[in-house]
Image 1: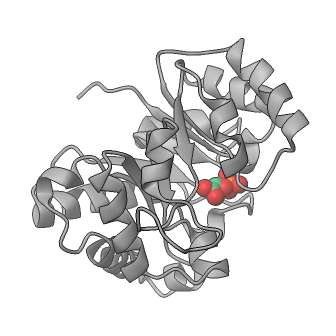
Image 2 (image 1 turned 45 degrees about the vertical axis):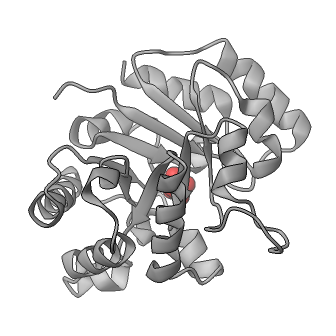
Length: 241
Ligand code: PGA
């Protein structure tokens, strides 16, 4: 299967309005159509970032369509402003906002209901890796997050393998370790959910130096810190085209 590599920029809680405008000026001059680029700014900047040359992604959402849930944003609302992807289950949400697999499962169902593609993040801690529990942890995260989701809906899910210890740390697994995990995830999804073309990204300290090697193994990458500087993000993209 020869598909475009998926490159996701997760800008997290960064950029002021002025910085977001500067970021966009650089991005718009450097659009690359050989790749599927998804930019995920903070909620207030989503409409500003809307552009036909790349896809718009949100970093989170709630699982209900509307109601008295102060501070939350629904997939239905995100759909109406042109969001095509939503990141779910990022380890920062699991750790700082206590999200569990049950909530992540509810969010996935809600996102899929609105024909938005979820980017489901899974990954082990360093302690779990050292105890050789990586595959057990990933299987549990996947099985609980995907519980009771119809097979034909599952094809819309993108999975991001993001070892918790690699996020923002400057450390990454070896190419062989990334390949092992990606193969494990693909095999599991094929065996248990009968889907043989699931997209699996890698995320965690992807940078200018390692992006080429990682995109040779994974279907794409989820980039945090290194995507916050627009020039650096463009340079990274140029490494893989
Ligand atoms: P990082 O973040 O690239 O800064 O490690 C990746 C992520 O959180 O998805």
